[in-house]
Image 1: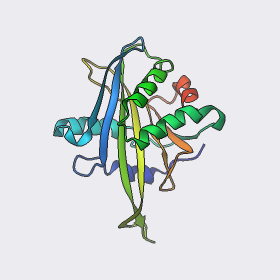
Image 2: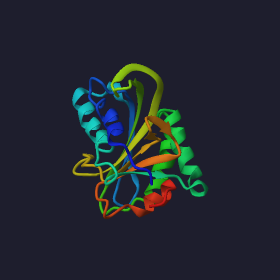
Image 3: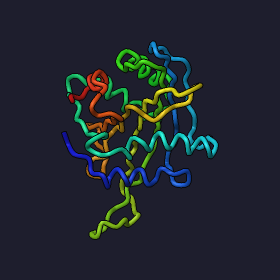
Length: 208
């Protein structure tokens, strides 16, 4: 398992404010405790109200801002078992979450693997990051030669009428490895690392 560089994650989270965010879209669904979809949403992030942007950015930020290499860990895909799900995630990234059929397929597959005693929500965020070139003193030169395009996914327990609680599980894909996009890796978040969602690791095609 590769180690995550904390500074690299902070590069991303520092831009997760209403004034600096490059989030383009938010999509997701509400699941009842039996694993049935109880509603979906798919919205242009810029069309959200200020309060909605703040609330949703807090959910998204919880994943990359988590304690690295403890609650947020990097995993490589097991090639023979990850082709379909990884291709699905690549498809969702490429279409910037605008393909509802791909999203519905993901929700359906997840409902069979994510076990919980209560209803929950799945939140997907699509974003980009213009990676600034670093000077020899590690300062940003602000010129960008590469754009990191990525998804953040968060699984949140329901705390009320479709109100999400703090994320319990999630991931960033592709991983931000050595300040570049690497689809061979995925960063997985566990709120409680002592009780991992083991079925989800197999679903995603990685090994704990």
